[in-house]
Length: 630
Image: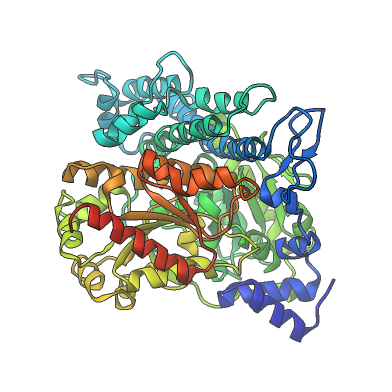
């Protein structure tokens, strides 16, 4: 349905926070282009049973649902009560999220292996210092061996941790002893990535898991296999192949699209594809072809976590987050949107059919109806990437200039703070940061991560929460779409120190860094784990003793459930802006929001209001400070 100018403008201001997004939301409304907000509106009212987690569709005896008011059915056909149904649904979601991160990791490690064996086209070992360091961590003999042989042995050692033979995950040893002692006592030390995910799926089969506590304790174990296993391996294998990030300046928002160039958007999560697109876009033959077609160059733009991967290593500009994927197409300026997997709307090709844009999917796991399918494989990676870029270039003359609207000016921001670069900026030790926290200059730290969700005004939760936290002298680290939201708002620039409290501002100005540090993509939440582990070890405490909190103000994905769970299992309190589907069981809520604190030193909380969430985060940080006597 098309809107008139006035109603479109008013509705756009309700849907998005940043002017560049509002402009294109308004354009899409006036042109009758359907987006996620429209589809959410059509779904109202959403199923109350589903929102409470009280639906069960696990077997052919169902589907079943439990009456939350106690007047109807109290058990499903199999006998499962509300506690079990809610806990199984939550574990199911968590296992999907852990699997998504870990399958991503497997693909990166397989490319590392093929690169080492000389079978991958266009890839090379970039950070050989990290390669040798991690190989030594795995107990591999590196003396006198070429880098390729070490990479091959390391890739095989990592792949071994997906199964059950080794029975342990190497990177869990990076956690402080006090933290791992808790895991061992609870029986949640992860044994293998796939083992814990398969174990989760087995538990939710009818006739297996029957006790909600047992089900949820395994959820913690599966999440740890993700955070300290799959995600961490994905991060480090990517660093070895493409380089460990270091601080750099780039730009963000839909204004990074260029009217006189071929615009190619890389969207999804795996850097294996996007790295080759960047390389192909520099090919002299393709640049000449672009010139022949009337373009002044080829502009590669990132989106979602694929964008984060390119951003932190190469400074490639980013168009935005999950909810920007349809808006980018609606600018009318995108020749090709190239997707791998995760966070890709299944209806994307339908959106693109309203314009000249070609959606090109590349993974056999994520074939999009109506899109061009070009299978991407390591052995022909660069050739395929060139074919993709050529397709985009040849599409440039079909752009309709009358339908193009590129909004505003790009915002600059500082990105690429790996754990190594943060430690390096502090002089090789975390002592200056620890001293600033002990003195009270910095009250504590918050990891604000996650996606956008059309249920919340786009970016409002992220920007409001983070702005408030830095005013209270709370240092913020970010990954994923959260970083884009705050980047658009100017919070990831060194000058943003002027928006922070006096103590945090003085530290940031002394170091020349923003009060909000960009640490990468969603799998790079593992970088935050490494930072916390390093600080805790330097002090001589567990992660659960540190004055830190996690937050996901606008989350939507099952991956966010796994991330939140592995932070809680590691001892970090997590505040969610959107309620998980657990409120149909008072016992599950009590376990996750309260009783977990006695087990792992942390728990979940839900607070939709970002200002109240800031109050809660500050109180949780002060509680941890009190425990440390600071």
